[in-house]
Length: 335
Image (cartoon, rainbow, N blue to C red; front, top):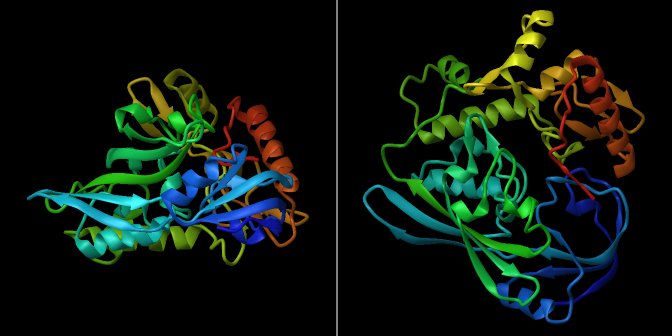
């Protein structure tokens, strides 16, 4: 465990933004993390770097969580119970599950980032949220270096939300996540988004979890840019959820507005549609801009600073508020 000085974080965030870490250390084990916390308290945690926008140099000690490992804790006739360390790549873990025949995560294929960050924002896509299969989150408490386990209920999961983004923010470091995955009688989710269409185009009537994963991968690749080719952090904004009465008012002026019913009196509206209607889709602003295929994605065309990207995000928020009276919430962590 060696602490390095003045390290660029450009290769450690999917936006590809260059900021400088005054001090940097890569952690490969739970024990190393415990030892580090005995002398260091003011930390900046870095995992897959996929859900953040860095806008300034980091004065704190940057801790890169590189703890790897997947273990099958136990199995029964219907379920496999699996624990995954925080440093494992999320998409590679999903593919591993599919190879084992374990279901539950196939709709979350190709989401960037590492396993340790998945509970923080309760990642979700195509009708599935990770909270549906998480049984436990293990974390290291920074104040006393104790190992703490959070049950699913204790995580207080919500839409793109959890206890780790709110009252416990900055108090714990997630070191592993445990899942309950199906071995048979998989609860397949095919009706959300374009999955059903993709399956029909491939003449698949009785899809497997691999079929669904392949469909999701194809859909995401057709809409979302690869961070290795153009800097981005996936969906930059949350899909707003509004009261049914507000939605009905919007529908009067926008009859074709897409929507998904969340509850009896709440409607989800795709943020990408709102941004496209506001005229931002495909527009470039210097070194940053809005992706041409998916308006929900802000991109770095090369040398954009984090502040430039954040400025564009604020402009989009202001325009959506002006046009639709909707407060568009940023999903990405601004740092």
